[in-house]
Length: 160
Image 1 (spheres, rainbow, N blue to C red):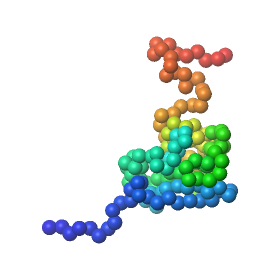
Image 2: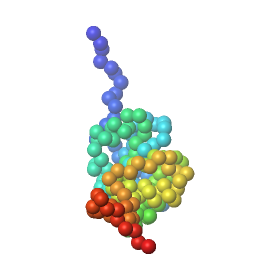
Image 3: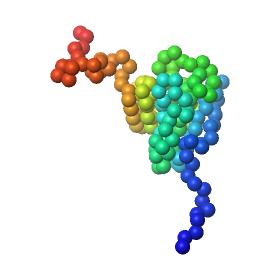
Image 4: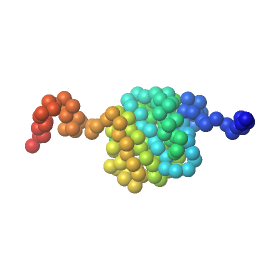
């Protein structure tokens, strides 16, 4: 017969408390779970998404072996400030947020618009990004974004 363990149950994303950090006078709200050591995985969300748009089962699975951080972009959800009007500005905000948390190396998972942001960060801050994972996204406005509309037997022509 075994006795029940007295150790606390693992934290789940659905009950992880919000935290905040001030970045140049703007409060960014985030959640962090998983172990304290290792390269953190920063989750970059889709257009107008907030912390609660992440599926707790997905985040819990990712956080089983590594630190995972989600956050509300500036002007979205519970973060302060005004929403930036460019992907580049969102990428700059994300870099400042990551640095404010004290990280100098992260992995990024970008979902939809978050993938656009992740690509800009990886291009502009290559020493910060160890790995970039893109999900449900593509290049912003590039020729590849038209491929899904093209006939499978035809490659879209590129402008000269």
